[in-house]
Structures are given as structure tokens and as C-alpha cells.
Length: 507
Image 1 (cartoon, rainbow, N blue to C red):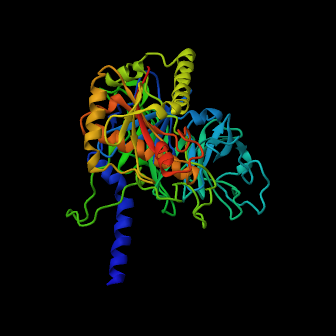
Image 2 (cartoon, helix red, strand yellow; image 1 turned 90 degrees about the vertical axis):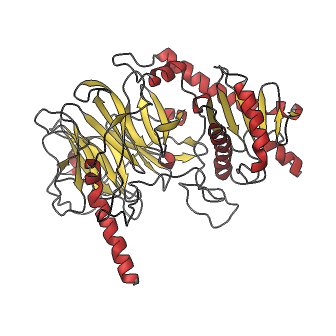
Image 3 (tube, rainbow, N blue to C red; image 1 turned 180 degrees about the vertical axis):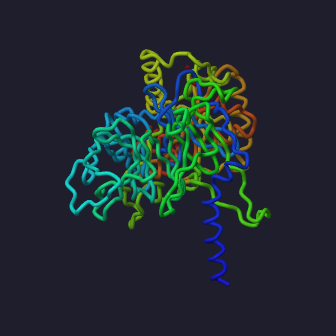
């Protein structure tokens, strides 16, 4: 019985991988994403906790994938400003390391103390390092690689795919390199599916299907192709997601949602506009037309409430409970969408409108810095807060919601408190509101960071569920920064620090 159960599971898994492109063909249609604004989007990549990141001008935007609508939780990844990222990058969520290219060279950086460390050149045998063993690959010699771009990881960070230009050529080809037992990268191999055209933007789905963009078609449009990596002689096939009259440049997948960069127009796929993000949801796959087996998503999203003490996603397990993890959680300097971007996204954006100016980007950065500064420097106000309901106190500028130790749950007894918060928000119809989460100083930095975000998110979700428009709210967390009572000793003092603050945004 166990044998047949295992065999059936293996069969379902195999069918799942073979059926992905067929599921596209069942009616998976690319639709214009609401996050698009004026100007092109580029550098579509997966980031921490399986979030989607893209670049607009020189700014990196992070989006969480919603289960029932579109990308959401808009924030600017200010932490990436320290790295000279060119385009698509690869994030290793098992080691908290990022791989990216700049001016044709491959670099890496690790997450440490709430920031990306200074980038280091990635050494790869045969490319910028001698080959230890005879190299017999007839598809291409790595010593001829002169420029690298568009890295993507597979096999839990043990295999690196990338596009590269070789000496004496101008077209890009796809290569891959495997990680050795000592953590170094072995000599890369050129894939057999390359042509004299350009192959770029690799993205591996479930370690089985490799998607990439290529202009090998007769009209030289960039379309999405895929190849089954299990085939001994793989053949590249045109994906049904492609349109012969437009270009598709890259793809990422989270859960059953696909996101693609394309220059097709919102209302006419046969015309070309700025490069924008398009989305599609995979149709539900059926087994023998009966739905007896439900197939797993392409790439599992990581829910915000799955974190546990001592186990921050992307960190190695620790033997000692109180030992700090190797790396800290991602910074959470969340940033609101500007009014211009918000208005443009609601109208679908306009082709031909220029992107953010240098002055506008500077203003956006200053606004993000201001949010962080105001959140961490107004903690002293809380000592004079007045109690307005069972779990909420208030100052002139904010409402403060308190939580129990190591807890982010919204209890039934909080109903009265939320009614008070909703009245406060509704009394300011023209304002947006910021939701900041905090913890006390006990516990690791990484765990407290995640706990503070979860607390803020719970308040955000509860307010939205009770009818507050999500567009009026933004949430973030600051962990054990911004303590009201430093070096707290008593439980009452710790309670002052375990809080979520709701305040009006001053922009």
C-alpha cells in the first residue's frame, strides 16, 4: 500500500511538471498589472520571502503576491541602493545571498546587520579562475566569456544559470554553473539550446522547466521559450504566453501566479508600448479530468504568519535557542506610493510619459528616510499617552495598540478597539495612515523583526476586513528599535514596547 501511495505521488509530480505549459494553454491569459505606472519596468526578480521585485528608473520596488488579486504591499527596497545592480538578479533564500551583475561582471553580497555587505566578485572556474580539471565541454569554453548578465538560481542555490556574451560574438547565450562542496563555483557549461540569436533572462520553474527569452523568431521579436531540463537532448519550445507581435523579456512565478515583462499594450496585445508587468494565474490542473489530485504550485509563497521563534526564513537553524542567526531579517523601511504614481496606476499608466526625474527620486528617498526617523524618534511621546479603550492609548499624533508577549493575534475582545481605530481613520477621509509594529528587546533581532511586521500586518488586515480601503493604509515593522522604555525590567515596562502605532501620514 505504501509502495502504491509513493508511486502515485511520484506520478502526480511528474505529470505536474509536464503539464505546466499545458496548463498555460488551458486559458492562462496575461493581464496588465495595476502596479504599472508611467515609464518602463525592468529587472523582474524574486526577492526575500518569494516577493516580486522590479526596477523603475533607478528605484527597486518590492511587491508581495496576493492569493486573490494583484501584487500588493508596495515598498521601495532602499537597502538595494548600496549595490550596483544592473538588471535581473538572483536571491538565494537558503543562504541570504544575492547574485547580480554590473557592467558584465558577476558579484555577490550577503545580508548582515540589516544591510547588504559590500559586493564581492564571484569567482568561477575558467571564467576568472583556472580550471582544476581538464575541460572537455564541446558546447563552449568558459574562458571565452567576456560579459555576464541575468543570473537565476536553481537546486536550492546549488546551480546558477546566467546569460553571457562570448569573445568574438555579440549575441547572448545561456550557461549554468554548479556549486562545489567547498562553496566555490565550478566551470560553467553552455546550454545546447542556444542559437545565433540572443538567449537571455533564464528562470527555472521547480528545477524542471527552464524559461528564457529569445529573439530567434522570424520577425526577431523576443518571445518566451521553455525547455524540459530532464531531457537528455532538450528542445526549446515556444511558450503559449508569448505574442508574435510583441516582446516578452522575462518571467517569474510565485504560487500559481506568473508575472512577465512585455511591451504589448494594455488594450491591444498586437501593438507595442512601454515595457510593463503582466500577470496570469495558472488554471487548476486536473488528474484524469476528475480533480483527484491537486498539483502543488510552481514556487511556494511564504506566508507572513509561518515564522516561528528561532526560525527566521532564509536563516540556518541554530542549536542554541538564544543564539543570534547568521544574518538578520530584511529591513522594513516601507514607503508609500507617491500620489502621481497612485493616480497613474489607477488609470493604467500612459505610454510615452517620462519616468521619475532625479529630483523626484531624491524626494521619494527623503520621504522614506523621514518615515523611519519619525517612527524611531517619537517613542518618548508614548509615556504621556492617554487610554482611550481597553487595549489602545492615544497621543496627539497617533493611536497605540498593545500586544501580549510573543503574540501577534487579534483577539475577539479587541473589537471595541478596532471600532475606535476605524472612527479615527474615518474622521480623516483625505489622509493616509501608517501602521508601525514594534517589540520589546527580549529575543533575537531577526525574530523580533518578523514579529513586529506580523503585528502591523494583523492590524492592517483587520482594518481592511472591516471596510477600511487598503489604499489608505501602509504597514511596516521596526523590531526592537524605537523602544519606549530602554533596558526594561518589569513586565509593565516591556508592555510599553510591545505595540503597533497608527498615525496619519504627512504626505
